[in-house]
Image 1: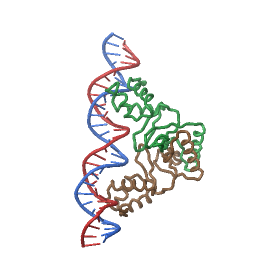
Image 2 (image 1 turned 135 degrees about the vertical axis):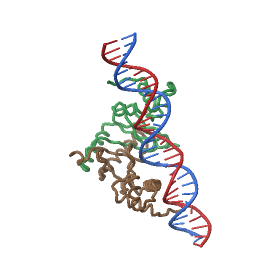
Image 3 (image 1 turned 90 degrees about the vertical axis):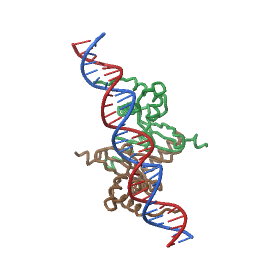
Image 4 (image 1 turned 45 degrees about the vertical axis):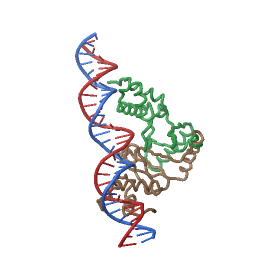
Length: 130
Length: 130
DNA sequence: ATAATAATAGTAACCATTACTAATAGATAG
DNA sequence: CTATCTATTAGTAATGGTTACTATTATTAT
């Protein structure tokens, strides 16, 4: 009836803490080092369930595989197109601005905004040096 | 050397004008009614090239297939999760706000923002009535 | 016309993700 | 404890949007 806390789910949580915005495959490979029998499907299913439950964030990415963030608090992601690194951005002001955009869109389109998907891409300062 | 103007590309442009934010498959099916030999690959390739050239906009969608917009001018898209309809939103003020967000992200993450992908989802007024 | 080469049609491959199924294992009840 | 119930798993097959490939066609420049 109730949810069971499987060892696999704990391993996935741990992997999310150790890795920086990993993909499902990266989580899978990481766990496989200590527990070779873990199934990729199990990783996908748990990540999906955790994201749906609001325990983690899913970072959609269009062309490349989705990434996951152990930090479930609403914030933005900026990815470097050269090295792939993901940066977090968060501020009160930013949230206010986004809510204002929601309201504007609601008024102009009539759609009651329930979800926002945004991804910013560019070149990080490190990659720009080279 | 230079680009050639194929009949297929013209048909694709026309389909984009006739249809409302269609997917590649919808463009394909539409053209097939008058020209059954069109290839899905041709549709994908041309849409991709046109989007890359800035002639049209690609609307990424994560789970569902990408959609395309004949209106290449930068603007936002709001999709209804019930009926799937895509709404356009555009205003000077909105663009200013987005540029401000870019600048904020640049300062806080060091990433020079080159591309922005955003999608807003919710329920449209029509679907809310039911 | 002819040659050079974009662009196409048709099909196969790709790859992230989901679905499926028999086996496993953690909780619950007696 | 032991048996039962069922959530979860491992392993694998299937899905679906998209891209890659290749022989053929068609457009432009000479």
